[in-house]
Length: 84
Image (tube, rainbow, N blue to C red; front, side, top):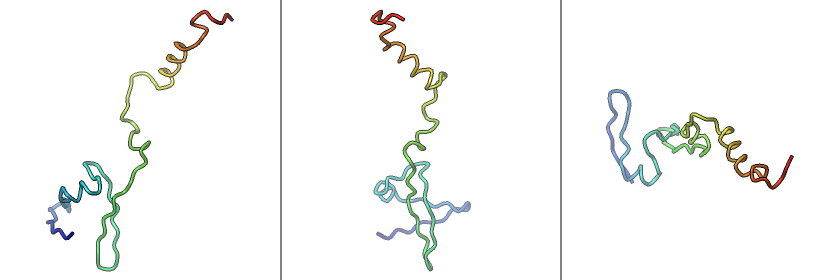
């Protein structure tokens, strides 16, 4: 597939929609740029899914506090089954 695109004043290019869909590219996707002989090669950079989610799930309470709260709910000590 050959596609011609124009470089903007700031050096940006628009990747056609069919190519973005084929490679799963969306806003914020990263591309590695390599120069091979007389060619410029764009390679989609795969990001670790954990890193990609980092910071997206923000809460006023820390995750540890939420997990401890859930654990206390499930504790047999709270149900009167075990006495300390």
